[in-house]
Image (cartoon, rainbow, N blue to C red):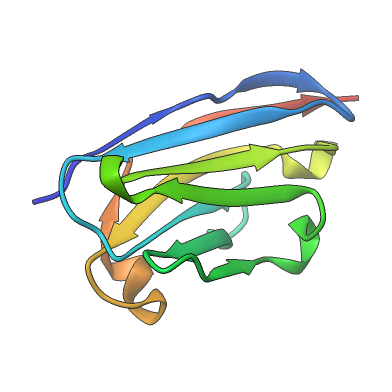
Length: 117
């Protein structure tokens, strides 16, 4: 059983930046971030493999960067040029499998990101 510890959420103004961090208690192959806004489904924001391959939602390309430290089993999401539509609960997710199985992996409890205008 892998536990995920998230940090870095908060309130920021439009155009500002936040960095989310998530540390896993054990080995993972793929780590990523989902978000969920009120009344909407959870969506994959970004994911990264142990080899460094990345995947981004179209809405965040060019603004967000996902990275990881394999030695620490930690994933980061650098969020720049934030917009009000980025407001959501962000969930760290990890799997020992592939990106295709990420949603069925381990989930953090979520951290709130709010972008004010």
